[in-house]
Amino acid sequence: MKIDAIIVAAGPSRRFGGDKTRAVLCGHPILHYPLMAAMRSRCRSVTAVVASTGIADILPHGVLMIVNENPGHGMSSSIIAGIRSMPKDSDGVLIIPGDEPLLQESLLDRLISACEEDDGSIASCTLSGKPVSPAVFPRSYFQELIELRGDSGGREVLLRHRDRLRTVPVDEWQLMDVDLPEDLREAEAEGLRRGILRK
Figure 1 (cartoon, rainbow, N blue to C red):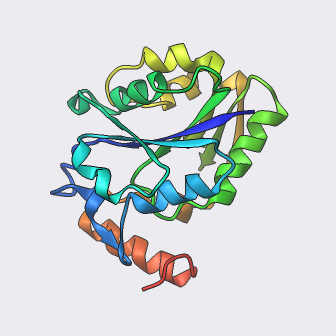
Figure 2: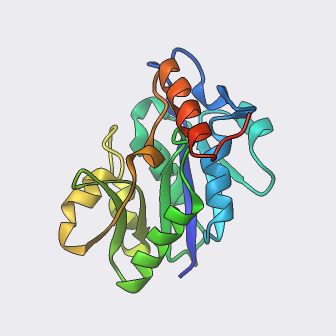
């Protein structure tokens, strides 16, 4: 399957108190880490959906950039912008939050494999028995993703199609997200402890 990654990174970062995509974690912006995980994975292409072109200088070479013109309309607006930019021959998208710096490419590859094993099924991570992003959505779900509104993200589609959902268990630390400045310190401590990050 030709799976393309969409990194959702256009949120206003209100709780963080500034542009968290540029917040530095062990020498790199937070956004650098999920982007690199996606680029090292089996994804054919990686697209970052951002709030402005001002972020272009921190994107790794090879990452495509799409500007969400309506970031105030919630996460769904970034997903819509990303889906609309996908190549016509894309078999599916892997939607990844841009604020999870400890994500590993091995997890992303497991999601792609789960989707391939059951053609037409969605594959998502599962945490405490609940489906969560990152998740792979085959092309047959693109229209439903385009019709999303507000901040529900892809979870709404995941819950609507539980009968077509393959879940991949994940250790909670991989999905640590950075919403607050203290989350940045916790992610750094966890990443250093596991040997994922280096100062």
